[in-house]
Length: 270
Length: 79
Image (spheres, each protein chain N blue to C red):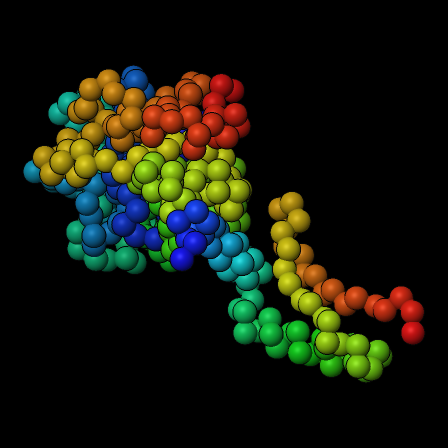
């Protein structure tokens, strides 16, 4: 993706935005990019705990906005990957403090003054001011969707709003896909979701218990599991490589060619 | 009882429902308002073609990247 500032969003809550931000951010940093991930879910911050950095939060995004600290003081450097940094959301719910102009200025400063290659902005759920502020400085978007009714509907709404904002690079991550359910026809398959939503795919993440286990200990799965191709961690690493411009084939998640062969024809070896 | 072989896959239902609800969402019109529109259109059509309005079908269709409102009224080709 050409976009340096990318908002991670979904409309619906609980589909995996924060997990995606943490994992894709970590995987991008592992590839050598200087990455800042920003939590904009004011009052409900979680990116810090998902990344295992909660003990090191001193200043947050609102402190930066209000001038209570310098931008650099709010950047928490990750323990595992040196090029990964977090700016935490404020835990005191003061939504008026989320100003669009300060968001723009912060993202600009991260890219131009602090020399970051990529800024990932974790959006709150919903379509109100929190989302609007998260999206204001983005040139690209990762829309996280689960293959189920309410998530797909909300994703469609969010995609409409992103397009209205003239965010040109909108990419879809289908999260928590269950290959067995797809195989027996009880879950939308990837091509169905793409057909309905009409945006470009950038990742398919299978449902994977290891994601919960790794967030339990605050270590993103993308950094943790081994080389297996069918894990969520591997899927997040693939997404990072695709964002970086690499052409990464989609693995066969259920071991049979049937379900994903259509998809592979469409996207596989391009 | 013949469901073992021809069990309807639930995802086919879901896909159909999603396509329908998204067509209303994208057009920013609720299904109830659509019924109202249909009734009013029917009233206008009947003014000009009495007793022909029963076949009126009004729906949204996705044409490329835009939603199109289709009002389909088959005209009898002979009398």
